[in-house]
Image 1 (cartoon, rainbow, N blue to C red):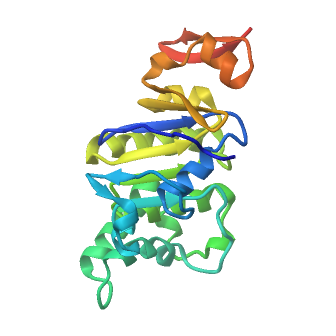
Image 2: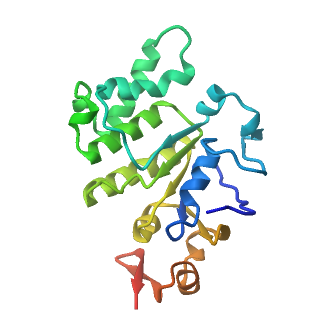
Length: 235
């Protein structure tokens, strides 16, 4: 999908859900933000700096990316998470690097797996390890491409809660491509809806209404309060 005239801003400490049908360009947008793909035009700024003018190391100190698919490779969990410190490494890893890595593993609950190889873990465990690596990178922006797709419901809630808490506590901005609207409504602060390669709406929870659900997802549904949480209820 070709993205056209995509313009939005996100404040520090916010958790943004990127929404839209399959093929609308959500993952493409994340790859443009991370410079995996180079956009034909426009500008992406972080704290006033144009990302296209930064070196790869400088971008990696600002942006961390967690892909939807996690490679099954024979590296230990500890070594995988330690890779998140490479943008800061000069001659070798420091004691500070090890402290940050262990804190990231503790935060994601994978410290007990530190000596295991990645290809020995379940899909859900691998995804949490890759998120720990991203946190060890200490980014300003955390990009997540469907991070809960391989997780059971308990781990879905746990991972998204961790991301939201980190955003609020450390001022990190997170952007997540997510298909489950109810998870997005429960954990995210802001919402960007894409339609036909363009921004349809962006803002707070108020942008998700019957009209948006109809025009973006082609379903007749409404947003209802269930036990104090907003949820999508299909007619």
